[in-house]
Amino acid sequence: MWPAWSRRPSRRICRLPVTACLVWHCLLPPAQPSAVVLKTVFQRGGTLVVHKPAGLSSEQRDPAGESALRLLRRRHPDAQLPHRLDRLTGGVLVVATEREALRWHNSAIKEKRWGPKVYVARLAGSSVRTGEHRAFMRAKGKRAEVGKGKVARLDVLLAAPVSGLEGSAVDVVILLRTGRYHQIRAMMAAEGAPVLGDELYGGGNRHTPLLTHALLGLPLPDGGFQVVRAAELAPRGCAPVSRAVRDHLEMLSEDVQRERQGQ
Image (cartoon, rainbow, N blue to C red; front, side):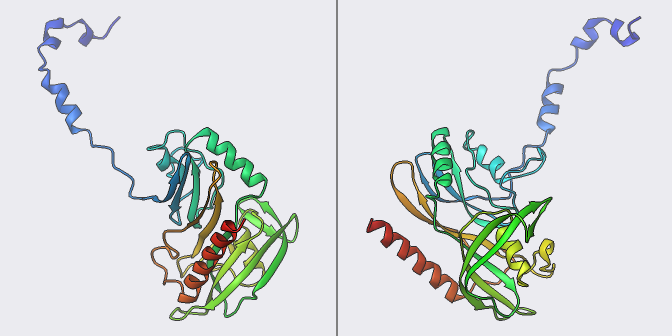
């Protein structure tokens, strides 16, 4: 037996004004744009380089979560990431907006043609040893474990004390030789100098972490080469990095460009 309302004369339903439906549509709230902005650093062909803000996931697996890739696909539906930065890390993020570009960059990474890869970090402590650092590392859950696994290498090119902060801290320029999971965060923490504010690795929670992919030597599918740099070195809430760090990055950028021109 059908419910009573379904047996009412159809003319009563037809007398509802058409505008009633339109009113409901007008009351629906418009979609709110994301407050996160991905600044374009460089673009050529199917290669796009953006500045990923610290705190934003590169590629969020949770469908409900925001990510750099979700934002990118609103303008570039075929966007893919040949590499990733973890959520805490900001800076240079390379995007392939075409499949051919993705295949090309994946091959370039496998053949170790990307580079140099340079990071800036603010570490807890009064001093950090410059030069080469080595460790064995492996991913273990949401952390990296130092002491077992594959070899990881990085060079600390510059260490500059930070003034004006509660407690001691050092800004460092790091040349990444390998790309292990949480490599800089875990390696430096194991040496007693975690990223300041990185709770996961013992850096406390009183400061905004500063870990930025600052500079990348990027080969391009068309045979070109570009030195791409982060739009900003310190995220919001962090004291600016020292002049010594900025000058060192400028010098590195010029050296890489001269080296490529001489080849």
